Image 1: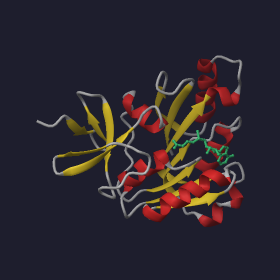
Image 2 (image 1 turned 30 degrees about the horizontal axis):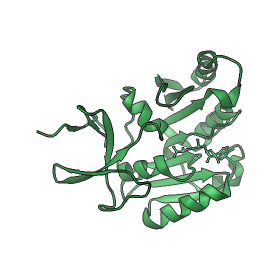
Image 3 (image 1 turned 90 degrees about the vertical axis):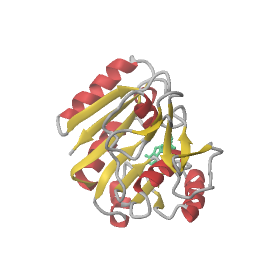
Image 4 (image 1 turned 135 degrees about the vertical axis):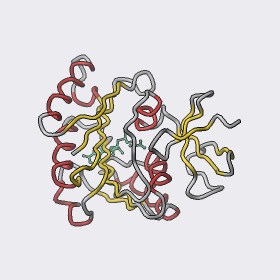
Length: 223
Ligand SMILES: C[S@@+](CC[C@H](N)C(=O)[O-])C[C@H]1O[C@@H](n2cnc3c(N)ncnc32)[C@H](O)[C@@H]1O
């Protein structure tokens, strides 16, 4: 019997025995990041490394709220080379869209190459702290995912959730403590971020991602 089971209500799969995370490959036979492929139950699964992706780390740490669905429209702030985005691309399928913003031209070039194969990814070269520079190129989104490793990461998240996220939409903020302050304890910085966010949005889940992602946490909200 197969050990790969879907997380209830999600398109994310877990190998309960080996503690591995998977999505079903939107482009069977194709890999982009040397990820392992596995055939099981007549499907092809892509292995999602939780030490390379804070979203996969949150899943491994037991987050139950990662209910990104087929057809969802995503605003991804800090898409970088597109590692995590490629797995979200599997989850949302051909009907979904990822608007992937990043301020570094070198990584946006890689994301552009990825988007030639994964047609549901639209890379955008822009600074997430200047929403007006990309607002006209996106639409209201079902999910906002942010991983920008910036001092003002909470402000960026709040502003983008206020303007871009649909009512009822979900927000995921990967907080990197060391980008906010190099000296303060991570736990204190996570608590400060939580307190600021819960003044405006309902926090649905909170996970510290250590040791998979050191000094990081994931805050999930519902608008
Ligand atoms: C930790 S990496 C993201 C990794 C990626 N989320 C993944 O899991 O595959 C952080 C990214 O945020 C981008 N970034 C930092 N500040 C930004 C800003 N103000 N606006 C947009 N992108 C930013 C960096 O260029 C970098 O690519």
